[in-house]
Image 1: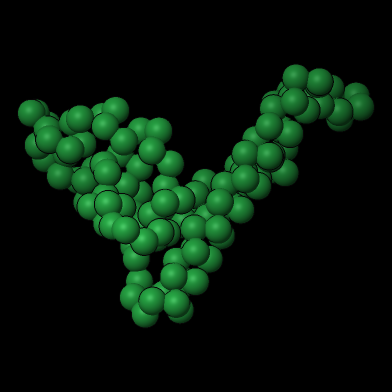
Image 2 (image 1 turned 90 degrees about the vertical axis):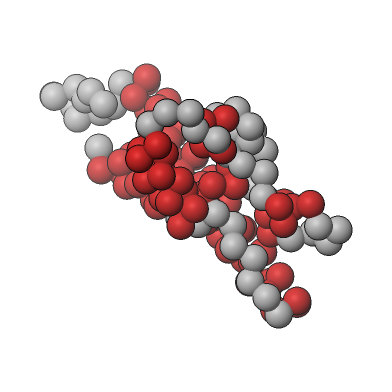
Length: 126
């Protein structure tokens, strides 16, 4: 972001991007709290924890096919099936294994929280 050196003000374009990044960051933080809150609510009600993995953004989870609503319903289906390499690779098998392990271990709520906080910090740092 560029600033006027004399007045130390942001340009209108920079203010627009700062508001956009800040809004997206706040939205991601709220989303992560909603996912985690729904997981806790579901656990308190049903007695078992439903993991919401980052992998579920790209691969349809089998638990989603159940009859009752679960926290997995909060996972957007925008990217599911878009990247067939994640589901069944035909090359780069070692890299696929590393990516698959990362996506399988990282919760959606933690990733969106970290990304949202990073965006908010980035906007407020400038």
